[in-house]
Image 1 (tube, rainbow, N blue to C red):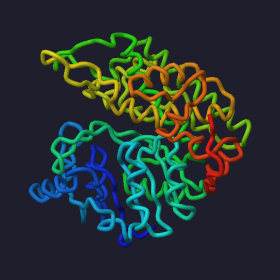
Image 2: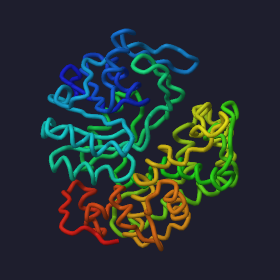
Image 3: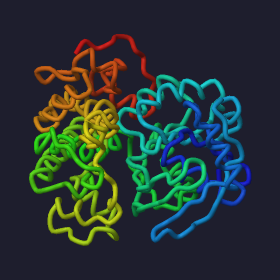
Length: 410
């Protein structure tokens, strides 16, 4: 993997992250880049935009152009882009991971490296189940950039970049090699996390996104906004919201500590949310006196709006089915709740958010503190894959296969 001339990388996705990642990778000398965009008309729109504009323009802060680059091949068919790929990076919503991996699985080489940026919770359970024992898996805690597509297939803007990207692999022994490669390709410092469980529990998106939506619901669930009145999502964090976010984060830290005590797995990378913010955005936060002020004064978050949908009379209302909920609850909080149940750790703050968000999504994930079968199959909780005790959890975390001998009745 040290010779970029022989390295083929495939980016899977069609959203904001893919718009940054595909041209960024192509800017690295000699790297061959494929873009797999299987949904709708994304591939044809990419090809048209790239052909007409001469590539995808990346802009940084202050609208500064960072270069225009085009992937070598763009297709909606896995067989056109996956064969020969050494590294496959999935940068798509978590609900798209499983169908996407099913499409690429027949064309992967046995020694391929496949992962997601970000991975969200339980990626390794699903991926190991689909791809078998030989593939090296990786998962990153977050997307390295706050970014927005300006014009599909033509231009993307990077609003901010995290200082450090946390990453783990399955099996854990491969983390050094994969972290070195991705650090070089992405131009971001990659922090090696000892195992994928720490990535799952350390996923701050599952705290921040549903937590803020929960607080907005409590504050004024029926609010209507004129387009110019829509709140900045992260700047909307007040002291009450910060209290709920901290409570959820502290519960995840408690689960991690219980896991470390009971299994010996290193979980020190699961830290309180304020510590993560200060490490990731040290250059962007101007006031770190409180958790709320960390959000309010983070320039990398500026301009990112609360998700809304159209309402009556040209107004907008809060969208409680946005990706901040539909992704970060079933592929975040529900996964972490499943792990908490295996350790016997109570999570009352997380439970509250899961229960309320279940009504928004029309799926009952939790009842009387236990996972419901109805919601289990729409999540990546370990129990969905027959992982019912800590011994099985450790085995899969260390790269073992999932046996699926018994589906949990939880």
